Length: 202
Figure 1 (tube, helix red, strand yellow):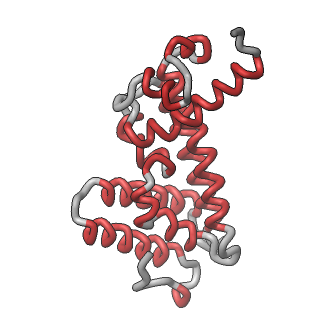
Figure 2 (tube, one colour; figure 1 turned 120 degrees about the vertical axis):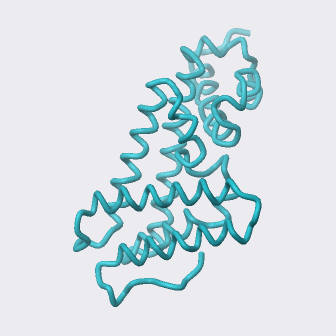
């Protein structure tokens, strides 16, 4: 039966959504086109009618993943409008986020893969990182000096800590990495030294 244009677009969007999760779970090279399309309930035969290449799909999947993550960041930050950074950092550097790789941070899941990926994939990752930094900068107190530079350091700490926490077997050490990073970020990011957060766990 002939697929309508509307159905084709729906299928394409479903493939991007599914690929965004499966790439984060398995890596770009850890899953093939057949399994990606199967995950979307489609056959591999229609792939090249929708995408120029696997890299094309990977770039779109990364962009879709970043968009979803930013929505979650807005939700987390909104839990404390007066101090939006704290709930965001605690949610990001939590055992729950560590364990939900397929739904979590795109850069933490795919950053190493992207370093060897096509320019289109790296461009999508770059746009996501820039958006991360801008969002974090907006969460910092206005009197924090060099907010953009501080936001870059926070993003790097968050992503690096999450990657490390996922890469080891010892759950206690994994959580210790997350907790230490939360404390460091919040202590260094407080505008008023008297209000710095210390000694708190995720």
